[in-house]
Amino acid sequence: MDEDLFLKNLLLREVVPATGCTEVGAVALAAGWAARALSSQGDNLEEIEIEVDESTYKNGFGVGVPGTGESGLAFAAAMGALSPRKVEQGLQILENPESTTIEKARTLIADHRVKVIRVSGPRDILIRAKVRYKDDDASALIQGSHDHLVGVEKNRKPYHGAPASEGGIWKEAEQIKDLKYRTFIQFAQKMDTKGFPLLKQALEMNMRFAMEARKKTPSLRIGQVIEKYGDPGEMGEGLSGKVQFITALAVEARMKGLDLPVMACAGSGNQGLVATIPVVETARRLGTPEEQVLRALALSYLTTIYIKAFTGILSPICGCGVAAAVGAGCGIVFLMGGDASQIEAQINNMVGAMAGIICDGAKSGCSMKALLAVGLAVDSTYLSMENIQIPARDGIMGKDVMDTLKNLQEIVEGGMSSMDATIVKVMEAKK
Image (cartoon, rainbow, N blue to C red; front, side, top):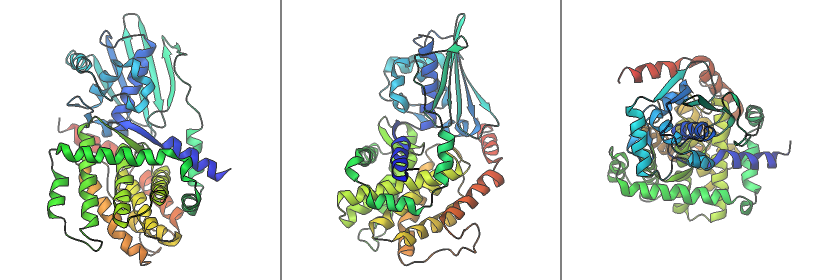
């Protein structure tokens, strides 16, 4: 395997633009393709049925649908079915909704023409959209990742107007786990950043989102409060506090449905924000040249992707905390001149501290978890740079990064297998 080419393709596939929570975006995309196969404008559909795996159901339960003031998977499905001409936009299908489309979606919901069914069992993302109009029906299946369109059918026959998704997505996940972590560090050190315009695009897109989020003043005001009370720190006016309030603002705004794209990482826009903002703000504080910032971002994204390969795209544990913030922490150590062993110490220290943070769905409260995680990313850097590391004999720590992540995977798959079902039960009891 050509490792450099593999990692380049990995970045191009896993770092992609998305508008709104990726779960509502994926549901809208599936519904849009099904409606497209039926050549329907959506509001004429007699029935829209969405089947989703437990984790997708959990994550989309209460999250905002961009630009609509509404939330949840049913509304996302209605918006997608009403937007068949936007399916080529992929996970940006919900961007810039028209007011007439929003009102038609509300009518579909009010008329009880949209049904969301939770399917127990699948461990991967599974979203099946079915639409019906008179004697015709169509379906679209997304599986494995949020935009991996497996197939579209009309009247139970293949619909050839949909693009064929590349296969091998599960095989690729296993290939990632076979790589030693130092491979990612070496790649970031020697990569030609000019060959990765995606990195600069991610920097600009996510920081623009953060700037716009700051203007909107989300309802929980978590970011503003942290900014108000943040203490001065070792690096000036309080790097940890600044990173925390900017990230918290951005995450909450995204969960509320701010209608702007972000560059998602490993299937999550929140992970993209968390893996980006702390690295960029640290680089600004240090006066780091752009090329080195882009290298640090590449390492942050690749670390996030690497960890998610072990935990799963959707997981019972918080991806922002146990993957993206860890990636950001590694990017920060990289910016501060840390060597491979110090970057690896950052992973072990952060995973050891945060492995137990559960994911209870996408919602405004995710900003609190992001705040906690990115604060640790900055503060843990000082320990890692001083070669302080949780010993391998402690808890779930392994003798190296790969062993630690294998232990984490065992906990997620073996010890938390019923977590999502239990969380969903608690959430539904509050309806």
